[in-house]
Image 1 (spheres, rainbow, N blue to C red):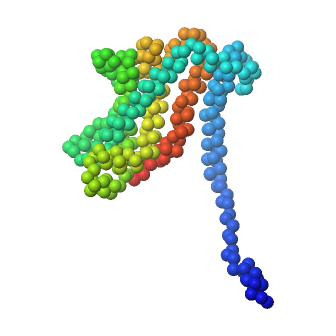
Image 2: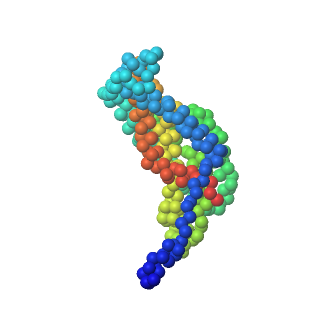
Image 3: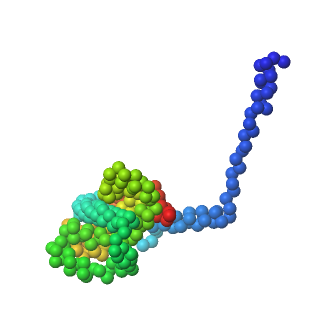
Length: 296
């Protein structure tokens, strides 16, 4: 037997045995959880699918009380066309975008500063002040409507973007969430930066914030969504239709044109579309941020 033949016969025996990975069968509990989650997802999507279907119907078909069809019999963009022809819907969307952006930016700046101070500094009355902030979670926003309106009116901010945005900036829950996340960041990074001569603001900007990307995205998105969907405060402050936000315009002004189901559903779809796009873009950061709040 030649050397080549010996290598050929020895090669199969020299190969390591490849172990096949056995797929684990899901347990009965996991299957039940998945089925329940899928059922809840379908139930949650049904109203959205119905609104989307109705927005593409002609008004006569959408107003029928009988013979309800999930799929439009006559596809039409009449509802969307009417909204853009009126012009006020676009104005409301712009107002909502401006107000929500101001609220989100100011909330992040103030809440990050407060959370960093409570997480990294020791000062007299720290626990009492932080307890007072947490106690603010138990105060319903409706209870503060009258004093806030008097304050905004005295400052001559009623009917302005600042009057719409500033009372929505205070967010005790965001301070609590950010503080918990900052507490979980090791202090070794800050000590290394301070040895290089960095001050507190530089540490916050160059060390803490880069490590807090997911939680910052989560807080920003939740704040933006909450401000976008806010109805009561803009309803009281924005008396001029040109300053109304989208929820107020859809609830107050649109009703003056009559009950048009296709137009109302089209307006609701257009109003929810920016939130859906923002959530899809930052979905991973939101999940990471929410999961990271509970880390020690």
